[in-house]
Amino acid sequence: MENEISFDAELDARGLICPLPVLKLRKRLQALTPGQVMRVLADDPVAVVDIPHFCSEAGHTLLESAVDGVEQVYFIRKTG
Image (cartoon, rainbow, N blue to C red; front, side):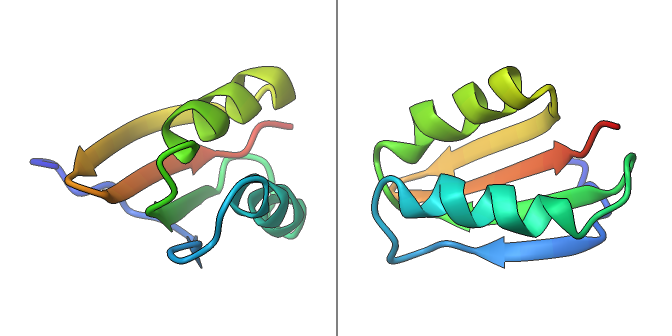
């Protein structure tokens, strides 16, 4: 990622497999206020589909995502 996005909280979901990354993300987002940004680190191959789908369904904004080999990084803005 060229322009690092500032974030308010981070979820390290590396080593977790579906559906745990999304379940933990949902729970952690509840603690944030609308407009805050969560950075998620993941390595589950299914997360590249699950996390964007979760954001779309829940109404959160996926600001940016990047995949480098198995490492994935997501920046998600919580909506109100």
